[in-house]
Length: 276
Length: 255
Image 1 (cartoon, rainbow over the protein chains, first blue to last red):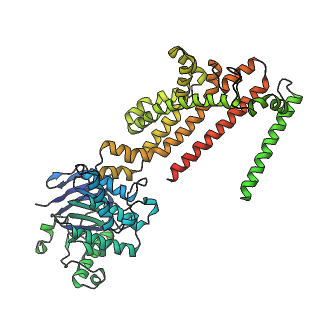
Image 2: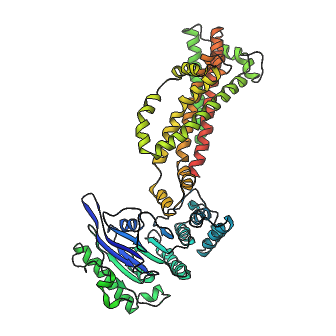
Image 3: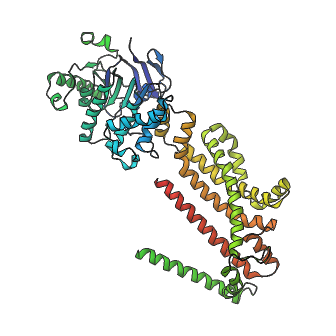
């Protein structure tokens, strides 16, 4: 049984249908990316997955329980960092730690926050306010805040969308490292507009057609060994195939609102041959 | 640098012009209006020995201003002590704000001269009545600005509170309060301005020692130059208070 499920999720704003019957099942420990062009309803989908917005139809389930508010033992990284500007980097992370581990001593909480800031290379900037940090550093703080609560489910909402290409590459590597250092691995759902980023990080990639009434494509498995090298992926045959399939769906969805695409269904029925 | 020097010179020209008009008015229009020179002569004692106490009302202008400032501080603190929590409540609850908005809109424009007698009826003593008046007149900008501050909390911060699953107390101290503080402080500053406006009225009617009380007594003793002395003092003190609050407010905004 899937650990994290989006089942028949539909959402409209007024007469405009944004998401139409979206289904996505994630196994425990799996990293799945949803690739979509801008305006395809990615953000809405993530808000629904996080329990911040209620869907019109369908539901979100974690370990079989419906998600109606942001779940426990979960974390999210937003595109716009969403750090509290009046708190230092350390205090921002600490706030999450205190809330996730209320039974710990103050000292344990503080050292947990420091540990994760050091893991993202911000040990020295711990006492700085977000306004004193660059975009890349802010997102590092946000990533540290997410991982410091030792989540079982991680939601990544275009986590590198606001960063320049070079910073993006470094942070992707750090994210890979953090994910691998977790044991057991957390389940992760990432939303991104970069097919390459999705291939680098994910076990499966799903494309979200362009709205209105966006639908998901069939899942494309990424059966590549880890760790993956972003440069090698550019020419790797399997990676090229995955990229082609995702891009094709996106292009088709762009030209005719999802009709040309494969029907929406959870992985197990859509591409049975490739189920691991 | 050149610019601020120029601005300073311009403001000196402005002040000189107004003093000139004042001198002309006293010379050609109202014989009872003391000239600037006469005002200075008769007020010199109060200004040069600002902390001298010669009698109940006959005191240096510094002391009188201090009495008034203490009274304003008490009334103002009382006002924001009620005003800020009220603003937080109204900002957080649509229901409460719909319930009380008409009441606030009606209470807000009431003059201190109207509140004071009610205060005297309620408290039977002039001092608490004065504080009551200052508090109830000055609290509204704090209430309204705090309310707007709470409503203006960016959705991002609200989401952070949700996804970190913060307790209600942490939500309040770590998200709501810091986010609202700059708005609140704008309210405090406006409230303090009003509190200082109200002081004269309340001291006049209660006859308590202070700038306003002194002003009224000197009017009754026909020493008109001291009225002008009091007016100028009230203006200068009010201006200084506002500058100080604006300074703190700026610090909060940039922080």
